[in-house]
Length: 165
Image (cartoon, rainbow, N blue to C red):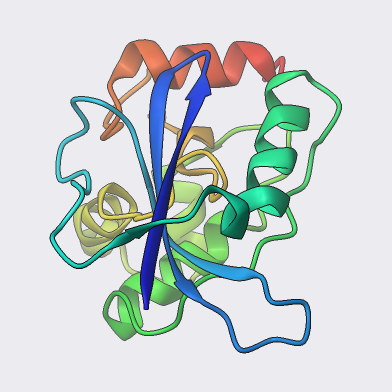
């Protein structure tokens, strides 16, 4: 069953979408976290059930993150979204530490990708379905410029400022 909730954040109202988890904790596997006006962001669909309680653990972590007291999320992600290549790139994003940045080129090199594959890497990063918690905002241009963030460059800068990156 697909469930959702909204969360008021410094970036605007976030939409969290998940799948009811079969874990013993009864938690929710996060499938999407999107922002108002986000390119390719989720929108509530018919048949989805609003269930604020299902996201209690996730929203608690988001509250702590925006308060500056959480630096590493512990969230179960819903399986099945993205291609094998995208999942590989998204997994690599999880290894970029809080308070730091990396470049598209460095991330490509870490993944063993050719220089020609940097564009594909950028496309995969742009399709990250769980903004904020999977830190695609920590990837910047080789010259230090902010480039490509589905939630908008102003929000990317706000996240980096929050993390003092």
